[in-house]
Length: 305
Image (cartoon, rainbow, N blue to C red; front, side, top):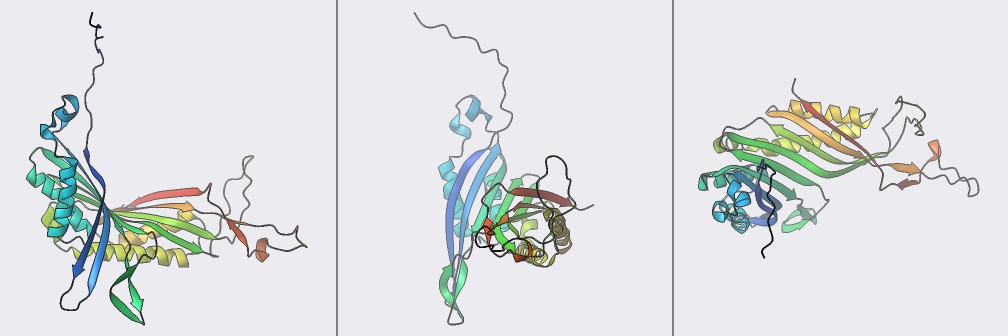
């Protein structure tokens, strides 16, 4: 006797769906035949598609699915056919392809992470084809391409910075839960995660026009971050990051808003007085213990008023 299947009385609908290929690693080399100099770009790309794909979930209908392997192949093909720099342009070109090629696709979400390769300097001269990775900092881009336009967010992730003085923290709430001492001089260290969101572009042509804006904005945001971090007599991470946001909005007129996420990486004094009265706290502190956690985490987003 066949088992009786219970009726599913749950009213369900697919409310959101997207799919694609993640962690596609791409390396491209540009060879200048006139100078003999080569330039390299290494990226990790994610491409997710939305559209009329409901039946692939609800009815096992694969006729609406662009295979994720095909998406991977397209990522490589478009990297060959078009510039990959700036990454904002490449992400927009890649996303636009899927809307032009497949009528049932309504949105392409492209994330590009650009990994650092810095040209080596040998005997005082830039080497034509040798590079080093001088940090884990990445240049990140998130682009959403729809039939109504292109939305782009650019960013810097993993920029490690530290200042040995020029930071304070006092005047905060003190109550029965507080053990933290006020300080007028402390180490400030963080891993910068900064982003700026561009005004929406009408189409790919609008992204391509004045494309130099993207590199200029990245360079300005990076320099603002470093200069403000170094020079600001920081009353708190919050106060310093707000100044950074204001300056980026001034430097990048086409940015609608900017954001920072900064972990406060702690360095604690080591009390060595137990060893022959060795003084290593307060004004005598020279040896510290870097902490892996817990850490503060401070975030903000600043928009144009």
